[in-house]
Image 1 (spheres, each protein chain N blue to C red):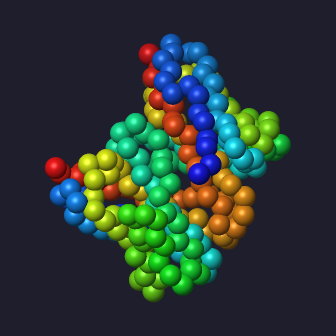
Image 2: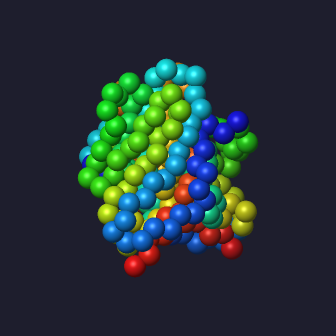
Length: 115
Length: 116
């Protein structure tokens, strides 16, 4: 079964607008971490933001924020004031404490920012 | 943030040859590194977990003798694709885990392998 689900294969957003990329996860481990990575066409994976399962507040990093709804097992990424350089693949990932150090990645969402 | 360097970025080789890809953590010690393979328009597929000083742990379906992993130091892991064939052509990405409970995963730039 898929542990990480990203239901949006592709998304479009107008420059300067906000966009939400969906991520839902499945785990029975009470301790886990959720991550978002950006992969531009160059191929490198860029870490964006982290949310721990016990964190009380939603994580924020500059224009990135994570809408963490634990009961729904969702960890949506919100990008505010989109820029052309935000066009890339975005991957949601999870690391479960009881399953060692492996990260499980979702299928990704391709974001295209329109001028 | 932490820096992970992967080399080479691009490699083209003839079928039957072996190719070595290096993954270095430049500003931190990484006891654990991961090797991923990524096909076009797909997500990352974990191949193996590389632990410093011990044998790598391979995921199901990944041939150990085909993809040799060595993690000889706290800053270097290598992936050797032995007797490469065209079906081994892919984008290979390494990552290194920083220490701590909320250890972060930092990625190398990736290596695109093309086997002719």
